[in-house]
Amino acid sequence: MMQVGIFTGYFPYGLEETAKKIKGLGFNTVQLDLHFKDVDLSAGQITKEKAKKVRDTFRDHELPICCVSGYTNIIHPDKAEREKRVGYLKEIIRNARDLGSPYVISETGTYDTESDWVHHPKNKTEEGFEECRKVIADLAQTAYDHGATFLLGRGAAGQGSEAPFFGGPHNSPWLRSPLNQGCRSRSPHAGPDGRW
Image 1 (spheres, rainbow, N blue to C red):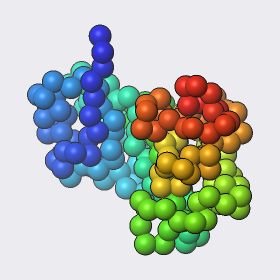
Image 2 (cartoon, rainbow, N blue to C red):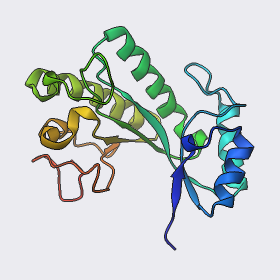
Image 3 (cartoon, rainbow, N blue to C red):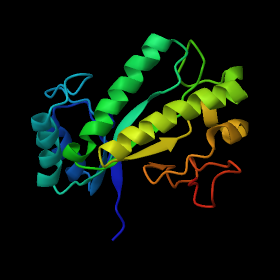
Image 4 (cartoon, rainbow, N blue to C red):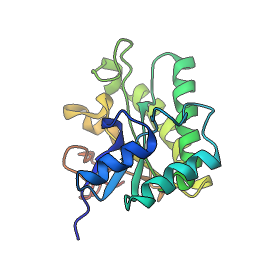
């Protein structure tokens, strides 16, 4: 049977109401966003108990969690802001299994200072690539250390003609590219399935 899911972030409700509404619409899996009106899963607030409550609520509604959303700009140009964002993403990765899925998805991001969603010339440079590669390697190691897999889509740093920037020698079973046409890497380092 084909699994049809939806991103929980489209539902601005409490945890139980979100699960009920999604199931009522006929979906049978979810990509978990960590924003609910009645459960604080912000940076520093994810606990094993809260994670299991979220996981079990969706399971009780027969909605397995296919992956946990950790979308953020992992190469934010402000180093303090980047550290904060990557730190929260690592917290999500460390708690992924308790949240209900070993898969955590994010994106490459951009060096633009005004928006997480637009191009910046540094995105295409060797310096930018190397800096991004180091962040990705660190996140993949965190995933390995916690039995998770880090899924990496292309943010502004890897869209369109910048796709070669996105690819690279990240031969790790704990790092994968989502297998959809919108996020598939066109890097010379990627195989036909978008994996490195």
